[in-house]
Image (cartoon, rainbow over the protein chains, first blue to last red):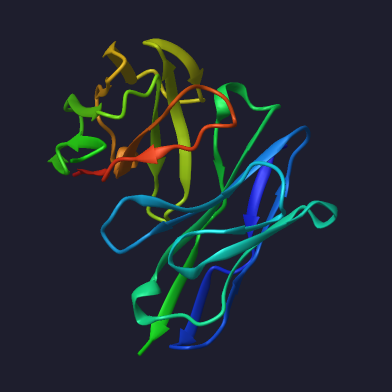
Amino acid sequence: AQSVSQHNHHVILSEAASLELGCNYSYGGTVNLFWYVQYPGQHLQLLLKYFSGDPLVKGIKGFEAEFIKSKFSFNLRKPSVQWSDTAEYFCAASSSYNQGGKLIFGQGTELSVKP
Amino acid sequence: DTAVSQTPKYLVTQMGNDKSIKCEQNLGHDTMYWYKQDSKKFLKIMFSYNNKELIINETVPNRFSPKSPDKAHLNLHINSLELGDSAVYFCASSQDVGLAYEQYFGPGTRLTVT
């Protein structure tokens, strides 16, 4: 079955620490990958996306992610987090095997950044 | 300018009632979606419409009925509400159907069934 899994349920960091959130997918066919962020009480916003080409994609707010096809991974990174990065982070994928561009989401990772 | 809007933002109702949530997008997109986010924040797609035509219908109870009067609107009507329907419902839209189009999400409607 097609699925997306995020390794960490809750990550706690101090400001200026580096961040890496894991995401693995199990998909066949062409796959597109996304990271969304949900700040407390707000809607999901797209951080970055991978469709094709350079496997290292840069997003908003200093985030980047690397698509490693051999590992079925799309980990999110940020060299130095800020308190304002406290939020829920969702990895998602869509596949050519999915009807209608359906997005499958991971379980989410809650990031808490201590000032 | 709000790209994807939902009303109401909060909805508290009793078991057995019927309620509707409205969604509108002003992005000129052809495809709209409904997602359910449960208490553990897990997001799952419920429905998708493309040009007012239903294209995705996940295993959702038939108490849930989406309606798309035009491309810019996708409403969700829920009959005989149950406690387990309590969740945050997100509407989303994309330019077209298919994996190449990113989805834009609305602010969510928090439904509480008592």
